[in-house]
Length: 124
Image 1 (cartoon, rainbow, N blue to C red):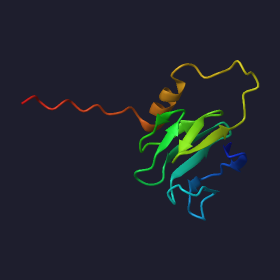
Image 2: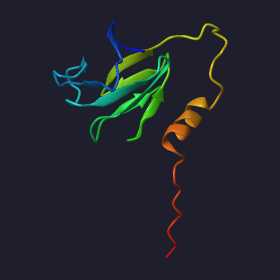
Image 3: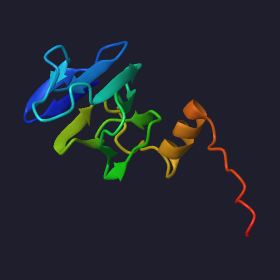
């Protein structure tokens, strides 16, 4: 898989691809935190993204992510610290084979477990 930013493509390599302003990052973008995001490829067709540090702003397809890793697929649009990125990966041979509705959420739950719902505190 690759990450495209401002017309330039970056190969996502294992174990993690660091995105940030640190000169040692694989994807150096001025204006981001030194260690902003970590992208981990999972095979040829999928990857995950997670914050590399606290208080980083990352969106996948317009949805802000938390501290847990979020699955990425071909065509996903990322917004990392105000910068736009596109995830590019192998496309299935049959373009009609798209993931079913809710597939990303089920994949996330499979990888990270179901969220724990804590009971509401008693009313006082």
